[in-house]
Amino acid sequence: TRQVFCVSIFSSLSEANDGTYLIGLVDSKELEGKLVELAKSTDGVRKIYTYLRVKKSKYPCDSLSILTNLKQNLFKDSVVEGTNVRVSIVGCDVVFSGVVDSIEQEKHAIWYAKHIDGVADVYSFIKVIK
Image 1: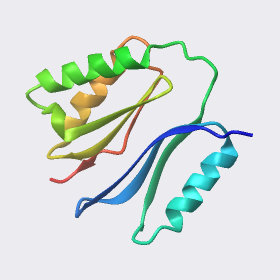
Image 2: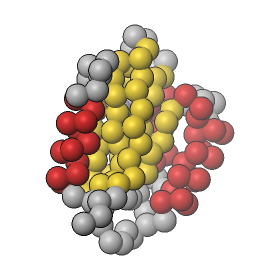
Image 3: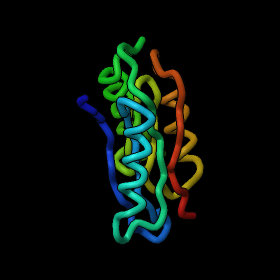
């Protein structure tokens, strides 16, 4: 059998945001477990944050449209400064990560995501450093 996954894996080693993130779609819960175990067994990984979902055959949204619309809004927003926030689309869910200076920046990002057609859920791993 062939197992496929589309997962963003990244580590953030800043003082405010120390961890490894696994964000994306996997074919099965079994594969999700394997990815988490692989991360746990990797030297230097201290914390693991996950937002992994089993992939469905079809989604009632256009993930590229969600991403494009959200990135445009974040880039134009003077409070968020869109380049400081990572955006992942998992199915029809928006997942944020990164480091911001204020809770207001996180609130703005979440507000934009919740007001885009097709977004089912919004989750934030954003760390506020002030």
